[in-house]
Image 1 (cartoon, rainbow, N blue to C red):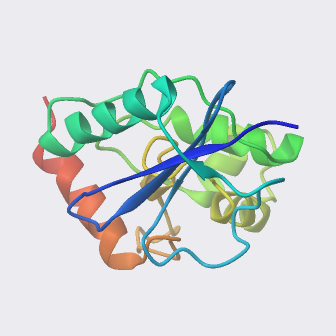
Image 2: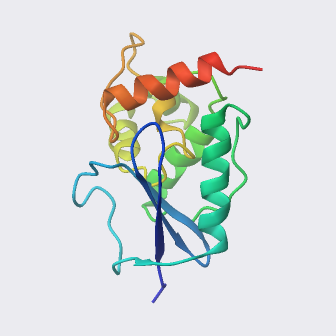
Image 3: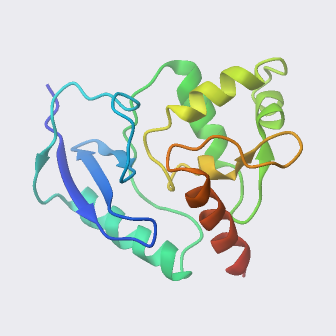
Length: 163
């Protein structure tokens, strides 16, 4: 069984909870995280871990506007389809958005926009796997685990820090 370690960090979006394993970062969770959205095989324990230290530092740099991408080992748990969506999300450049349908087409699943939305809703590593960059077909801000205001903050933050 994998041992999970957690720590909390302050951010303009509230207190974020980082969960790590020896394989990488397992989750970045929101202050008002919906119970069961991200599941763990065991309860994470408070503690120190190099993965969590690195993630905390890089999130701080992102928020400060000095980092546009992340260099952290990731250890998300999900189905093969969910993982493919999460990999696709990481390919959306800083400061840009894409629709659910566009990402489905990129994954060669053009009719799977709703499935992409469902997989995005289960993204366990918010901010670092940038699900906030996914918008509705009309460009509207749609559901987001951290709330629409957090999504708007992240998108505005990125548009204000384009290099």
